[in-house]
Image (cartoon, rainbow, N blue to C red; front, side):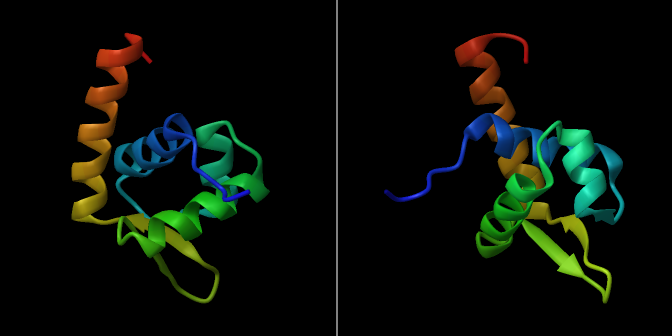
Length: 86
């Protein structure tokens, strides 16, 4: 079965990175997003492949891109419309 990302987890990851507005370690992102480290690794790889995140440095740190910010805004608006306040 093909892996499909949970949109709420995607939104939480993008939101945490956008609010921090700085480079973030995967472990810090996992804690901030309330997800397990192994799950966050998969989401980071997915978002990086889509061009929404950039992973930099020897000790990989994650930064959201301008496209990632746009997707975050659209995704949060859509999820809020569907489910109410998140």
